[in-house]
Figure (cartoon, rainbow, N blue to C red):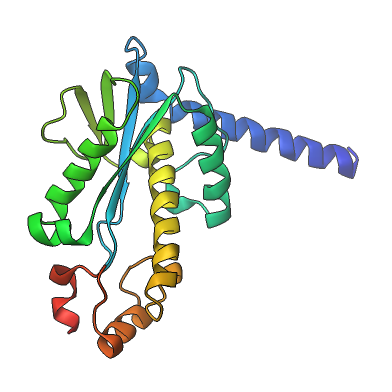
Length: 218
């Protein structure tokens, strides 16, 4: 076998492995295939010291396959951006919900997360029949709910939601870095990195900091 043939064989095997992984990620979508619309839901930003918690609801077309889609935490920023564009292009409908830092302080992070998820569902242009949720059951949601532990690695719909939510929030935090310089929001996305905490102690909180999250640092 020539070097070119070896490379081709390696590429073919890699592609086969990816297609197999992708089929495994469609297990729940196949299970509920009788439903007209299956919606994946995920959130990002429960842990940061600043910024909103962001949820996304995504309805993909039946039998949709997007190569290399995965839990957003397992992807590079560049890969997430590329997949975001493909998801937005192919999705039947996408809804985004956000709960601000003020709302998080007011009702707590869990309730704020549920609120953002309900917002995201409400912004869909269609009514979903099945909600595939990343590990949670959303109070007040009327469709059939299927909570899946580590769902963003097990369902193509949840993975799509996790990518769109992550890219949306990351872009927002990059904008916040321009508005509130000195906290390195573009780099840390509001998470409590060493330099973010040092900046917080030096500069004090800015309007997007979660007061209930930063007490121990001030």
